Structure formats: structure tokens, C-alpha cells
Length: 524
Image: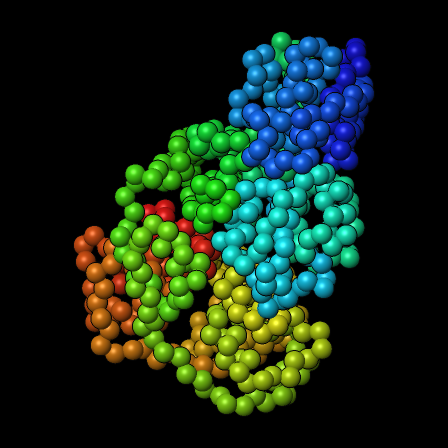
């Protein structure tokens, strides 16, 4: 191009990083540009929460006005800040590659309690200005005292340093882009499947005048069509819900193994328990509409659910069902009993890893009061086992994601191959993780409990049956059959394989924990 482009940007450290990122990419393609800093309503009004600010686009409106006036050629936005409708005569010309959209919980080190979920002490004062984050955090930790937190990224971190909060939440993308040293804090990273991000979080939107065809063509070197496709689903969901930045809505779309996966969380307010949904599809066509339809308050949900484990009223699954007045019959169809009463200390000698495939394995292993080797690391199959391990005062180095034990075995092997790994578990374990390790890995199987099937199991007439282990499937179908309209959910693929043997159709959740199971019930 034969002109120097003017890039409009907000003046925060993060906004300037984003604008300079675009400027540098343009420079690599022999296009000259310079920056113009523009102050927005969101920058000027710092004493109000987002839901108190009037209108939409309070971080973008002034930049768009300058674009329309011709005083700048490009506006660079955090894509999540944009309203779902472009102003007339403006278009998004390009979308950057997406930074990791995970969330970070930064915790003052004297407020850390690893026995609690997210490693934050009970009743902690947690700073966030987002209703989306607030609703999801309180669903996991209703004891949190959520406090308003405004300002740019360094300002928010300074407020934590000055101990105005016990912990704060930030998007990982902003911290990564600014290269901020977080070593003085304890950092918990929450994946997009754990705490669902804002639509379009982590991506940059490059906005221009629709009439500037030459610039549109030039900017295609910065555009990532795969990201555009995924963000289109997220922003369509946001648009269909009629929401803006203050709506307690999280939506994240990604393409995985040829399928589009969409994670959604929605609440009416920041104080309400959110509904969550996980959907998979071969195509994005009509996908946003399918997501929104599942949240229709007129949609008929199951009236009753049976789950093959004991639950407390405060458990995530119980609260998710109670919100919609779904009756829960929670009872295990098996009993577990210990198989050893004393642990030979030699078994743990020189152990590098201890891996748990179930919550029972954690409980029975620590009941033996083991003397742990210095530096030993812990791996677990999923979030449920991780939570129980926390209650014993230990954090995991590796937590399996998803419901396929073969995938977890493959990922764990990258860390543990060639080391000594002890596997506390049940007698008759399928040893799925062990099978994924290399021959040079020293594998020690340590049966710590066995499973006993209950007798005279009462049949359930619940609309949905949730089975949480292969043994529970065996116990139930030894004496009972399904009613014609009953639906079945299996917690993972090993449980699913047992249902396959019974000729029973079932649904699998995304994750083998109470959140995943609640999502699966909601998605039926």
C-alpha cells in the first residue's frame, strides 16, 4: 500500500500490545502504520461495574466513531468487547490467531489452602468485574465473597499485591501477552471446559471501513479463517441471547478430532447457579441455534434422575438438578472394602509418580498413612479424583481430561515414561493407564480396595439413569431392565463398554465428573 495506515487503539498496556502486534505484522508485509490512542467510555468510568454502564460497546464505540469519521484506518479490539452487530459501513476485516482462552485465578500465597477447590481459603474475597465469572465461581465455591474489580491488567494485579483482595480472576491471554511475572502469587489455571470463557475471548478483531477494499485485501495475511468460524458460533450464541458484556454467559467453540465442540454456561444473574451445556457437531450450520434451544425455559427437562453414587445436597450435581426441580435418587449399587491394612514402605521407595484412577483409590491409599517419597508427583484420571486428593493436602501434577482412558494414558505417558509409577486401585482394575506406558517404565500395581456388588437392588423408574462405574452397571442389570423411555448416561468409556455388553444405548459427558454429568442431563 502507498500510504501509512493509522491504527486506533485504547491506551492500556494490553491494548497497546495488541495494536503494536498488528502494526508489526503489517510491517512484515511491507505495510507502514502508526498508532493513535483513543480514550473510551470504559476507560473513563472506573467507579461503576460493567452492568451499570449505559449502552453497549463501551470499550469500542469511540474507536468506531473515529473509523467512520476517517481519522483512523484500522481499529484493533479485543474481540470479546465488540457488540454482536457491526455499525453500518464497518466490517471486521481480519481475526487474529486465538491466544489460550483459559482463566487465571491469582491467589495471595498466605490465602492458599490446597485442600479447597481452586486452592483458595474458605470465604475468600475474590475480585472480578464479570457476572459470567461470578456465576461460575460461585457454582464451584459458594463461600466466595465476590467483590467488584475494575482497571487494566497491571492495575488489577497491583490491587491484589496491596491485599485489597485475597484472589482475583484474569484472562490468561492478557497476562501472557504482557509477559507479567506472577511468581509472587499462587496461580490456578482454569481451562475453558472448567470455567467457560466469554465469547471470542483471546482473539483480536481488526475493524475497518467497509468501503476500503484495498485494505481489506491487504489484511487477509493476518486473518485466520478457522478462528473466524469458531468465533462465529460463539458470537451467534451471544447474539441470539441478546446479551452484551454484562450477561452471565460463557461460550467456547473449538474443533477437535474433526468435530465442533461447544461449551456453554448461562445464568440469569451473577448470583444465580448457571446452567451448563456441552454439544458436539460435525458442522457449524445451525449449531448456535441448537445451543440456544437447549436453554429455552419452556423446554421439557427430565423430572427425575437416578445416579449410582451417594451425593450431598451441596454437591454440584445435586444443585444443578435442584435448580430445575429434578428429583434425584442417589445411591451406590456397590460397596468397597479395603484389601490391605498396612502398607509396605518398600513399595513407595524411589517412586516418581502415584496415579489414581478413582476417588476410592485416593481414600483407601491415604487411609494407610503412607510415607511419601520426597518430590513424588501425583496424577489422576479426572477432576473428581483431583478434588479428593486436595482434601489430603496434595495437588496434582497431571489431571486427565476427557472420558477416554486411552487418551489419558497417552498424555500421561509423555510425562511418566521411564520412571517408577505406583497405581493404587481396585482389585480387578482394567489397568487402562498402565497399558499406555512404555516397557522401560517401572509399574507397580497396588490393590487397596475391592468392589462388592449389593444384592436385591431396587429398580428405579427415573427418567434418566446415570452410571458412574462398570461395577454399578453390572450390579443394576443383574436383576433389572430398563423401561422403554428411560435414558442412560455413562460417566466414561469403560462404563460405556459395559453398557455396550448389555445392548444399552447411552450418552457420554465431556468430563467424568459431576459437572460433566450435569451437562449431559441438561443436553438430553
